[in-house]
Image (cartoon, rainbow, N blue to C red; front, side):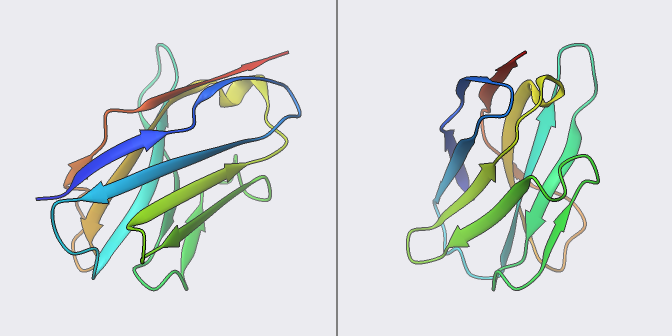
Amino acid sequence: QVQLAESGGGLVQAGGSLRLSCAASGRTFSGISMGWFRQAPGKEREFVARISWSGGITYYANSVKGRFTISRDNAKNTVYLQMDSLKPEDTADYYCAAKLENNNNWSYWGQGTQVTVSS
């Protein structure tokens, strides 16, 4: 089992930045891919970014590419999402997720952290 706890959400003006953190516990971080998803009010949850166990492979949704950066510190069992040039449409609940790298399903989810971007 993997427990995930997000932090770092809040209210920011458009053009500003936030850094989200997700701390993992419960088992070894080894071989675990990590990802961020978000869900805006009235919309379905959508993929934002993911990072491989080594950190060498990252993927981003087109809507955040060039503005968001995912990274991880395996010594701290923590993954980060640096969000720059934020837009009002980035407003959502952001969720951290984890899966085994050879698995297609995101098996573990955090409780989410709210991000609000004002115009």
